[in-house]
Every structure is written in C-alpha cells, then in structure tokens.
Length: 414
Image (cartoon, rainbow, N blue to C red; front, top):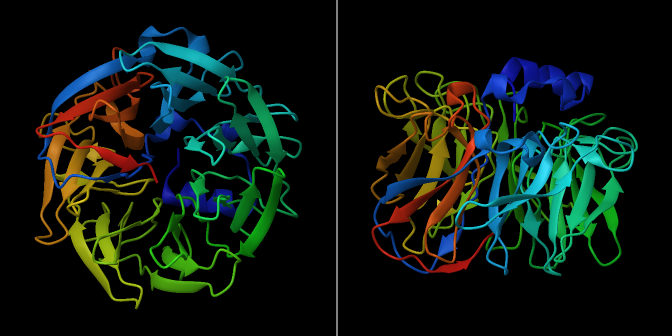
C-alpha cells in the first residue's frame, strides 16, 4: 500500500518504516500485473464472481490482500496479505480455484524474517516462489524470501540500507538471464535497483538511482530494464530505462505534475508497437491520474486523463496486462458507476485509444482492487481487492475472478 503523495515523500526522506501506516485507511494502492495472452481481445470480462472473502476467514489467514495472485503448476493461486496472520505482520497464502484459502506462513516482523509483504510473488527459475517484505529483517529494512514448491518458507536475505538499500516494495522480475531484479525506495539513496541470484543467494546493487522506484521492473524487447520513479525527474516522477548491469541509465519522461501526470506508482508494459504504457496516480486535467505511453526515443503522449466522474481514476501500483492482439487490461482503485465508485477493471485499445470500463466494484463484492491480475488455467481472470467484502468499505478484502466472452489461452506471467 502507499499513502498520499505528501506522506510518501516524507517517508522517502525520513526513512521511516511502513509499519506505522494503516494500509487500509489510505486505500490507495493497487498492484496490477499484466500477462500476455495468445489470443486477441476476447471481449469484456463480463461475469464477475467473488471467490474468497477474507472477512469470513480466521484472522490467522491474513487480511488486506495487496500483492495479487499467481497460479503455480499445482493449480493453486499464491499471494500475500499485508496484515493479519498470527502476528498481524502479513501472510503468504494459497487459494484453490474454488476459493479455499490456506495460510502457508505468518510473518513475525523479527530480525530473522520480515513484515508487511506489500508486493506479490514471482515464480523463480527453479519453480519456487520469491517475494519481498517492506519491513523486518536484521535492520528493519525489509527482506527477500522464498517459498519452496513443498511449501517450506525460507528467509533468504535482509536488506541493509548502506549496501543494498531499504524498503523493497515492487514485485520481483524474472529476467531472461534467470536472475531476479527488484527495487528499493528507502534511505539512504531513496532508490536502488538490485539483482538476486537464487543459486548463490546473493543480492547485488546494480544502480543507485533515487527517486523512489516502487513498481515492478519490465524487461523490454531490447533486453533493457524499464521502470518508474515515484518522485524522480524534477520531483513528480519519471519513466526510465537501464541496462541489467546498471549502465546507461536514461530518463525517458520526467513528469511535470501537471496535465502530463504525476507520481507513477506502477511500472510500465511494452506494447506491440514497442512503446511503453503506464499510469500515474496524480496529475492530468483534474489531478486524478493519467494513462500514458512513451517511446524509447522519449516521444510521450497522454492517452487518458482521469476525471472525478464515473470513469476510471486514481491509478496506483502495477503494470498493464497485454493480450496478443495488443489490448491492455488494468484496474483503478476508484471510479466506476455513479453509485459504486469503488474501483474498476478497464481495458485500453492502443490503436483507437479508447478506455472502456469492464467492471465496477460495489464494496459488497470488494472495493479498491489491488494486486496482480493473472489468467488462470481455466482461462478466467483472477485478482484481489484490498478492502470490501462482507465487512463493507472497511472490510478485509476479497479475491475475485472475471470470465471473458471468449477463451484466452496463456503464454505466461511476466
């Protein structure tokens, strides 16, 4: 979860941990994963189902799922909750397609494990699940952990502000070289990029870039890494590219904080046209965020400027999901129908530039959708909402799925 722009800037400058933040009260972070499908646009995901209600689960199961879901080879979906569990420091859980949830690990917020797993999980080159916590560990700067395919949790690394940065918040990227890449946004530099080698259990800082990078990194078709900085550029955020060895850091777009957007919390996704698509949480015509695209040659364009109406608005963390036909899918944590402005699922056509609302949340079935969107082997779209459910607007969140009009078929999660 992420607080308001002002509070987050204070966090970046002071280095305070996220433990003091009431994630639900901010209601301001949605991590969107975007996958690639072998089919063209299947039409709207029109049939909505609430798969699991975290309000009806024991407290030990966790509450406030913010990192989304990923489906493993065993058919179960795996994810994290930011809070709850035996020590109210978050959990790793798994969920069956029918909605049965089992807690795999409860974080203790100790020196030997982490706490507040904001981001979701990534399947590593060895088939195990990898993730990060934004706090905990030997220096309270966060941790990197692994959940083995047999369900055993392993603490792998404690971040150290003087060496590898502090407060990792973005989901890890499995790159083509078999290594995992991620970002930190805390002190002392306000932002690092790191590389993790699972076979040797080593973390190496590849660049100190500052600016509060927080979204997941993306590997482009050219092999470079692409990402965003929350307060990079001139202070309102930026889109950047960098080599995997940390060389040739390049700012593709520095946001002004005006109509072009401000404070991107999500990473970017590459379109079929070679341009990178993303969102900002602020700026635009009415200060409610934008959808944009930028080329590798720094040609920038605002596609959609959110308004305080029944459309999509207040975009937060995550990348866009691209289908084979080039259509993108995403979520907004606010906006929607006139009576149900608790977030949406939307789609973007990069050719016509049309942004179409697919589903509006009503809080009974979840509100403020957050975390990774992923395609299940049943060809349905799965995600999570950080609030809502039977507990209403202050509820503990839900897992949901949407069925498309046509089957999808999947290449794999990025």
